[in-house]
Image (cartoon, rainbow, N blue to C red):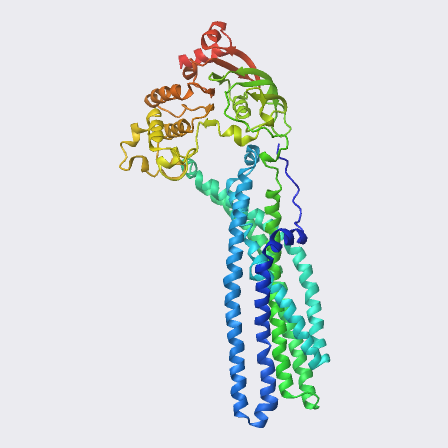
Length: 583
């Protein structure tokens, strides 16, 4: 069972080790570019001071020309380094995002089936596509600008102290006060950003369900009901977004007030006083104010970057929760790699329960010899699908064991078993694309002859020949352009092409009309030859030829035998069969 882990904050050290450090070369180069750009920004203030105090006073035109050229070169350096920063770091950040999405998707697909039973597909899509987006602020320009801006601010403060220590003190005090406010705010923002990510995933999940079930919604006239549910989710998301925007705005406005407001006004007043009493020149004051802009700009920028990085950490918290969830293959007891199997399946005193509830399967034992057909029948909720899930390794027994050729399936590497497994479900999933692509899904490299044999065996040509593009007909999302019987035949063709040793048929003929069922029953008979097959069926007329029929009631085997044997017993199977026959 997959236990839900408590969501904990991913540490700064962990992020540095796993995300920032592997990109250290690229980030170091970006830092050099930022320092070059910052150095270039220091040129105009000093040039302005020199121009006002010396060049203009002396009337030196040739020196004026040199200053203008020097300032233009500094501006060019700023432009080039800014372009290179965006081009290199932003592209690398997007590459990292793409890699992280692949890793998260790979991890999610490795998780056990019961994980997906409690998750919305839309919410998982949000985990993959949205939660990793913020990492661009760690590896892109955001992180480097945070470091580079800090270095620049410190360097300029040293220059300002040398120019006028008292005026510089008027800058330092608001900066320190702003730093305290920012740290407090970012600590509050992180859980809010995480909550926003969770709500966004829930809203996305509900929207995905709504769109997938639009026919049911319209069929019951439930549009207004779905609109209200979606609206409630969107409003909840809005309330959290409002909080984060308010906090971010408070940080930005604090920076503007303290640095661009308090510090600048104080410097203008005190600087004007120094000029009047002759302790400071006009050029020095202009340069000081220009340097102040160089300090304030990265600090203001850092307030926005800090919010973005906080949001990135919140997204990584949720990503880390997924990445730390134990996958199917993490089980250290699964060490056996199966070769080609014969197909003998045995249940030995197997019990199973979902999430600590009462057992739905209770001490079941039976053999399914290689090549045999075992049918599972019984009322809804009796445990038939659970038995099939145990045979397919989608579930693990709580007690007892399930073996294949004498090997305990709980010790087997799942990939080595499932590559020899085929499944046809009552409502089998088809992918957006063509009929050909869906049949080739389990074996993309199958030959055209193998494809055509599967198509013939499943009687797919009975309907594809009527389509203008034949097997290349696009079937729409989940095969919406096909009838239920057509979708089922396509799914059976897919299973035939996979050529499995173990076959699970879960209500495989339930969606078929009488004509389609006759076609499919013949193809299923061919498909089941030589394969160990489990058939779940409510339509008992389809399992008369099964080698063994297990009647499951309340998680236990109530009866076992062939069709004729069970009819002769006149027990539970006889009741079910004669009832259906009368209908």
